[in-house]
Amino acid sequence: MTNPFRHLATIHALARNLDRASLLICLRVCRAWYRVLEPLLWHDFWLLRNNIPADYLVVLQRNRHSVTHNDVRQGLFKEASGRRLYPSLASIQKNAQHIRRLFYYGEEHLFKQLAPFCTQLRYLETARYGPEMKPLLLQNLDTLQTFICKTDPVKVAGAEPVFMEWIWKYLAEMKVLRVVELDSVILSDYEGSKFGIVCRKLTRLSLVDSKLIERPKSETEDFMNLKSLVLDQSYIPNLGQLELFQLCPVMESLTWKSRTGALPIANFLVYLSSDKSPAAHLAKLDLSTSKITDEDFVQIIQLLPQLTHLQAAKTLFGSAATQALLQGQSHQMQMINLLDCPDVTKVETQALLQGCSALKVFYAPVVSAVGMLGNKWACTALEELDVSIADIDQLPAPSFPRHRAVYSQLSELVHLRVLRLGDCGFTPMPDPRAPAAAPNSGSPQLKYVLDMRLDSGLGLLSTLTQLRELDLENMHAAMEFGTLQWMAQNWRGLRLLVGCVHPLEQQRNLSNDFLREFIPGLKTFLSRKELQMWRELQ
Image (cartoon, rainbow, N blue to C red):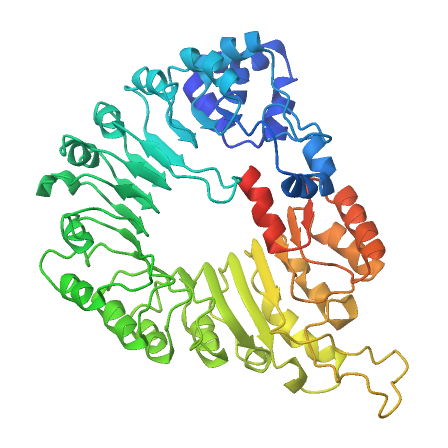
């Protein structure tokens, strides 16, 4: 019988699809398995902050079970101080050769001991660029494929951006470099030619809130391979950003934003209609937070026949652009983000959900519950949905069964992994089983919102077996114990719960403790802000 461990490359490829817990189980099978699979434990290594700010630590302590038994990172948090424990220095140096992805945000003294042994890096993400980085870059010239440098999101307000001197010199010497992402950095290219040499290798370049302080001397062939370009509030001197676009003939993804929100859209339209335009390839476009009119969006959509992903949050996207999408790209749109667009109404949202059959990610301000009744959505392959539901009170009586129309529509989204629901600012509807308030009692008039109870139709969502994130921050939920039991039984894969499951703090804490106990790996957050803080620490 052939020894399967002779095919290590195949075994490692299969094992990389295992989560951390499953990999640890495999390591305990026998010594042979341990010897072969142990290097995979070291493929990703994090050197995080020496100390966690107090407000961030509160979020971690609320999910103390997840922090104490953190299988996703090496080491554990000490709950009292927020510091991390790492393996012994001897163990780190012994296994550093297996590290393929290094995240460097802190622990400089440990980094200096680790860096000389990291010679096979493929991915490097850092918030620091000092003298200690140069040897690491030089000894990984043959292997490094992705380099990311950005300021630490968990930073003191007003912190200065990272100054990266001579960075292009080191990147230009890398043989297999394909991705460079720079966030909140100041760049220097004194020779003026290294920038183009680096870009000649890249398939993705991202400059976010960054500044290149010398004029780059770029030729047409420097950007022939660039497929993804992000220019977000960044500055490139004496090389117009539109001119840079024209040097990218095979660009498939573009993110373009300015500090003021103003973009030269007229020139952009001319560029898209020119012979040098990558319109035949451009499929992903992000113009969020820009001052672009509905009519301009119509022209952009018409000039991009291959468009599949559109992010237009906080713009003037409206009814005309919606119709342009439905007429030209309704069969191929996979991602649409229209959050905080003042001109996107319930009508546009319903039309897109009914007309775009290939949608996988959809964010919109509001959808009408009345429109959901009897009008089936075509996008049954949705994986992420972020929308507020209005007009619950306009559904046919009786009151509680009326919610079943909404839940019935959502229950068909069997591939849904992320569900964020809002209530359009309404207050919860009264429970008809409670005593009626006395006339003229002075109590405020309550409006209808989606009721989060099983007898209102929530039980229909047992079909959402792939749900991983549920956001109820604006739903004013008051879940009963039976509802919590149902969630624990039907949403075993749930990992993130955002919002209050009960308005009373004591009851809310008990409910969250119950859910975390019976749904392994679940983390709970009171708000999206807390969730963002937690993600910044990961």
